[in-house]
Structure formats: C-alpha cells, structure tokens
Figure 1 (cartoon, helix red, strand yellow):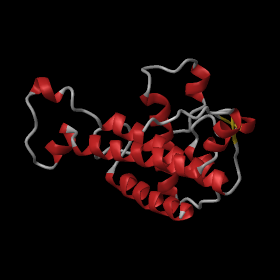
Figure 2 (spheres, one colour):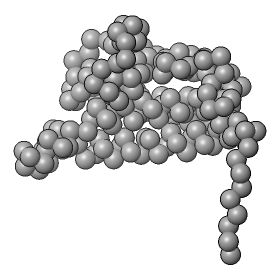
Figure 3 (tube, rainbow, N blue to C red):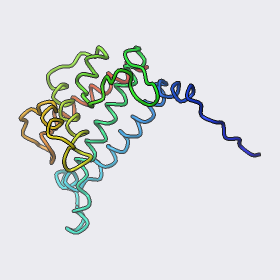
Length: 184
C-alpha cells in the first residue's frame, strides 16, 4: 500500500502550531534527552563515587550545561503548551503572535500562565532561561541581549555548572510536576 503525502496548507500548519500535544511531545523529548545526558555525565558519576572514563573520554562527557539547556527548552515548551491551552498565546506561521515570549523568559511565561512560583522556583527558571540563551553559542549576537538576560542569583554550585545546586534541581522537578498538572 502506498502512502499518499498530504500537502501541508498554511491553515493546517497554523493549526498544528496551536496543538498542545505537539508542544508536550517535544517538551518530553527534550526532558528525556536532558535526563539521559545528566545521568551519563562523568562529573555526576564521579560525585556519586562511580567509576569515570579515562581523561581523554571524560572530556567528551561533561554534559551538564547541555543537559540544563535542554531542560530549559523543555520547560519553555511545557509553558508554551499551558499558554496555548489557556489561550494566552497563539501561534501563526510558526511564530507567537505579537512577539510574546520570544526571549525565552521562563519566569514571565510561568507568570503569564498564572503559575504561582516560590523564590527557589523563580531562581531555577532564571538559571534555565540563561542556560537556553547561553547554551547554544559561545557568545550572544549583541551585548544588549546579554545585558537583558534575567539576573542569575549568586548560588554556590553543588553540581558542576553555572549557579545550579541540588535544591534548585528539586524545586524545578516539583514545578515541572505542577506544570504537567496544568496540562492534564
């Protein structure tokens, strides 16, 4: 049996962009990838007393910054799904109308989605926002974009990486569970 390719019309394209299931699917894939990288990061394994690879291989296994970037992107997709569900945003031609939420500001997205945040949840979202923006390239296009990033709290890291610790990790997991409830 031959499968016929159905042309994607602009109407179908716009409809697809507003289906929360697509956003949730992508978010979950990003989160799963983040968790895989974190579980296989040599610095995490070393801190848990597990054997690491030799030095040459270990240099390729410091995945925490990429893991957190993917975690931040997962939060962004989950939050955009909530915003779409609550009709706070609309996707047209692949972009959010009126340029809302185009700076990856996870705190603003959560607040606009009417998700109450405690202090640690806000801190974790600020760091994940920074990880999304800074994790993709070694430097931003313009200084003004860097200067306008949310201020990162001065938290001493317990885990290798920028300003992240176990407490913020736990808070982000609790928050993620609350966001998923919003989508149920």
